[in-house]
Amino acid sequence: MSELIAPRPEHQRLVRKLESIASLGAEERRAIADLPLIVRQVVRDEVVVREGDRPTQCCLLVEGMLYRYKVLPNGARQILSFHVQGDLPDLQSLHLGVMDHSLGAVSNSKVAFISHTAVQHLIERYPVLGAALWREALVDGSIFREWITGIGRRSSYQRIAHLMCELSMKLQAAGAAGPEGYPFPITQTELGDALGLSVVHVNRVLQDLRRDGLIVLRERYLAIPSLTALMEAGLFDPAYLHLDHEGAN
Amino acid sequence: MPRYFFNIENGEFTPDTQGVVLSGLVEVQSQAQRLAGEMLQDGSARLWETGEWRLDITNEAGDSVCVLNVATTKGAE
Image (tube, rainbow over all chains, first blue to last red; front, top):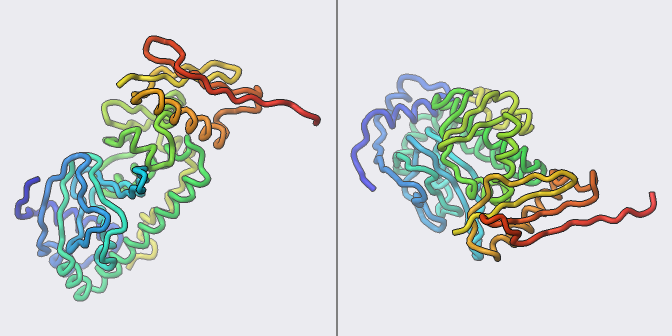
């Protein structure tokens, strides 16, 4: 774990994220650029924030992939969400003092911490940014609703296809990938823990998806020959990601 | 840890060509019952097409480690 004073790219990531959900003026951009950020490298499986913690800062994912999860007393883990660059996965800690779940790293990642005080100050001075972060939290809720629907009602095949589409759409929105594929660090065990499936079933379904020509998964890279076909297989409708600014200021 | 192969027979034989690394028989049995449950639940077992579904788990030597059978009985229409 290494700490250093943030250079510019981290701020750019945040500007890009907020611009994808709100219209920022020059003043707002400058305020974001002036935010004090502490950048930290985290390694695969490292816990970034733990359930029960009382964070005094939020984190911005700059590079890599994070996931939120809960662990039951019997050791069973449920993964709640996966996060890509530009996401603010523990934004809720700004208003909910105690973490009710944990945040960990799927892959070696770079995160930037922003103090709650700095975020509060930003929100008070720039209502547009306050609305953007509120909207971000609402989209977060929308994604959870989609996951509940999937775990409750989609088949295993549809669930895996759906998750692959979700990550594709999020990475495309962040400017980090095209529709043809993206780095895929998620293990079969993690897929099972996210989608409520046994690891052997995940393994079988991945073979089915491959056999059906929908994916090519090799050396932690997911190639998608036709995103449209994968979306059909996963009954995927991107509306719940609210990527199109609709409702944004 | 050893690798196990979860082969499925439901009218046609679908071998598991990749297998999964598991700690031993207890985990194999746990995974087998979950796999059967999940495949029956989401319909991918296609149980009623043949009326039978069988999971044969083999080790790296090709020996059967355990078998899970789902059988049905036809009644009146």
